Amino acid sequence: MTRSSDPNAGGPDHVARATRQMRDHSHHRAVEIADDVLRNALRASRHSLPVRAHPPHDHVHVSDRVLVSTLRRRIDDALDTAAVGAVYLRVTPQEVLEELTVELVVRYGEVLLEVADRVRSIARSVLAEILGPPAARVGVEVTTTHVHVSDVTVGDPHLVDPRDP
Amino acid sequence: MSVDSLSRASDTALARRAGMGDAEAFTEVFHRHFAPTFRYAVRMLDGDDDLAQDAVQGAWVKIWQRLPDFRGDSRLQTWLFTVVARQVLDTRRRRRPLVVDPALLEPIASTSGDPVALAVDRELWETLAVALSELPWRQRATWILRELDGQSYDEIAQILGTTPTVVRGQLHRARKALAIRMEEWR
Image (cartoon, rainbow over all chains, first blue to last red):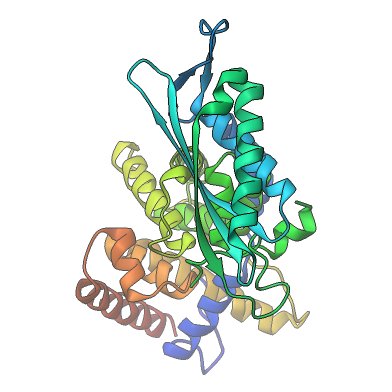
């Protein structure tokens, strides 16, 4: 390694200077491999449980992940002032969906009963489409958490979360 | 949600959506945090880019698979580094012995255009990179997480599975060793 002719080289100040360089440096390989790493990650399957469709299609099984992602997307797309916080399914040992709980993040000031009714309606519609019409009779629970609105952007439940630091 | 909206979403909101299968939200999380995780892997694996790629690939697969279990008890970045640090440690245990790779000394680009300043910066970068590679594993991990990624003592303790007191001690020793190394180079 070459020695510097800089009389001020070495010591804590130079550690700080080199640290800043290292922190700000963008590794070229990171850019090259990013797309592959992302693509491979998204291809990986998540642990899932089968849910049986309703008669006469009860020979068909649907992944609980499909139900959760479809419910999330449909409800989020339909609501401006509320977003899905979580979706929980209760499935019997016979793989029949028994109960669905949708946890919502709702902007402060919204009329909760109206939002909840709308979510129940969307959820029943999604279940009927995926599992067959009898699934619309599955119990749908809706729980809510408020998001305080400090301004339009910060308070958008699609963009913030009550657990944000 | 549009890409523009996703870029304004908080990490926790994105993690919530990605956990429920939203690939676009996961992509946004990835683009925000991938580079620091790769940098961590490269530094911890002595500049071996191929090993680092294997490690971060394995880690980001696990991140996608485990996001449904993310409860927001810590910052998302801290949780991501917990997964990455474990994967990097596993990779290190399995790897062949190697010497410091010249790629570790990847030179920085000049920002000033001043050849003297560039030479000094380059020497500083190289010296720090080598000194870092010589630190014991935990000291190096602690220093990187603190100085390059801005994690708190509590967060580093969570990532490395230790206590904030131990982190404080490791960081003190790492800083001292690096300062001595830079002083020797003077």
